[in-house]
Amino acid sequence: QLRMVESGGGSVQAGGTLRLSCTVTGATYQSYAMGWFRGIPGEERGRVGVAAIDDDGNTAYADSVKGRFTISRDKDKNLYLEMNMLKPEDTATYYCAAGNGYFTASQTLISSYWAMDYWGKGTLVTVSS
Image (tube, rainbow, N blue to C red):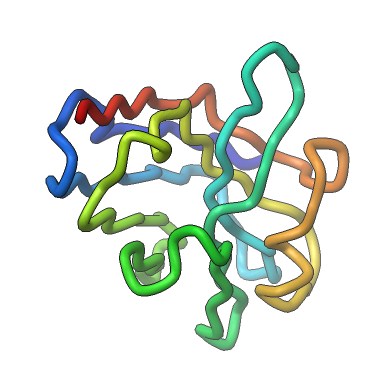
């Protein structure tokens, strides 16, 4: 049973940088699909994939963040999201998530809330113009 806790959110001006971290405990040696998602306002379990990474280190990004965001993962399966050149439209609650089994990064990126097995509680990112 994984436990995932996000940190690093906050308020920043447009053009600024934030680095989100997701501390993962309870991980085993099995494969996990892992990624960062944004919450959809007004939808309790609405999520949109932002960035994902698979066990081979391959990554996938939403078109809106390509070239600005970078996902990474360390050997303990902690997850990170480097967010550069932030825009007001990046404002959202960001969640890290994991799913049991092997999935490609592209598959994870388009996963819905129900397709992932573990979720953090989220960290709010606010970008002002």
